[in-house]
Each structure stands twice: as C-alpha cells, then as structure tokens.
Length: 193
Image 1 (tube, rainbow, N blue to C red):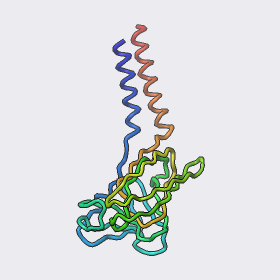
Image 2: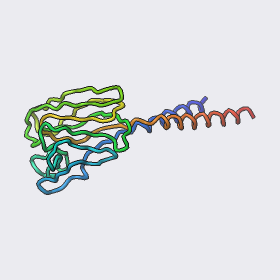
Image 3: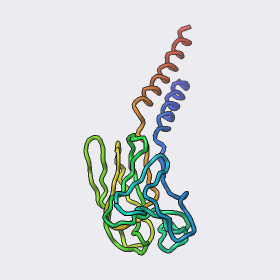
Image 4: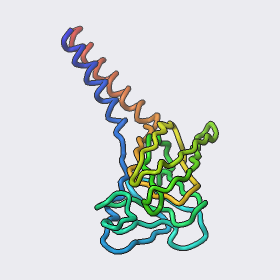
C-alpha cells in the first residue's frame, strides 16, 4: 500500500514539472546610461516585437533614472503611443499568459489604458487595463491559456515581469504515460513471480 501511494505521489510530482512558470524580467537589459533602444527583444525563448514604423520601438530607461519603473533594474518602455507590442514563443508553441507588470512610460503616475488581445486557435479575446495614478509598476493578472500570441496597444507604457507557462506538447504526456505504464507492467511482473 505504501509503495502504491509513493508511486502515485511521484507521478503527480512528475506532472507538476511541466507547469514551471517563466518570469521575463528584463534585468539583463539593465544599464546606467540615459536609455537603450531596441526594435525587438528575445528573452527566455520569447520574442517581443513592436509594430511601429519608426526606429527605437522599445527601450529601457537607465537603472537609476526617475523614469525607470523598476528602479535599479529594467522595465521595457513602448516608444510609440498607439503602436502594438506583441509576445510569442520563438518556436511558435502554445503558452499560458498569467500576468504582466505595467506603468506609464515616464513613471509619473499618469493614468491611461491598454487593450490586450489574446490569440488562440479558438479565436481572439480582449481585455483592457486602466493604470492607477500611482508611480511604479502595477500587476495585471489574466491567466489566459493555450495562446499563440498576446499583443497590447494603448497609452505609452512600460512593462516588466511577464509571467508565462509553456503548454506541454501532447508527445510529452504520451512519453510520460508510456514510462508510467512501463513501470507498472514491470512491477506487476515482479509480483507475479
């Protein structure tokens, strides 16, 4: 009986390894200059783009700038109001979009709104986030699942601490199931002998 419970507990823990959250915090982009600009950012297997036609579409204020919403670290700002910023996995796999931290572009506590679009194989859904009037980052929680891409547009803003989880491929579950069945069969053979 104890072995059966141990086996079940091990199986549950094995499944939980597929649900590890990824936090994209951009701290590797931190610097001490006025700002650095980017047209796209690759981080933790994700690609973040902005569709504006200008150069320097995305940027990071200096770590100790009054404009930096993540003081001492790095939040990314959108340089063109109304432009669309998007995130997707580089390998085009599905992912879950749990939350994102947001602030106004100059970290002055200005109000504004951003509309998020969540793309999945089933269609597109939308949610709007309104900034509070406080300085610093505020967390928007979405918990959207099985997405191909997320995009957002609206007020000039900064974003940081994007929390996602990958959606395991069906093959992953099949291999895990095959392994568990193999262990069960081998245990049954030993018990019969």
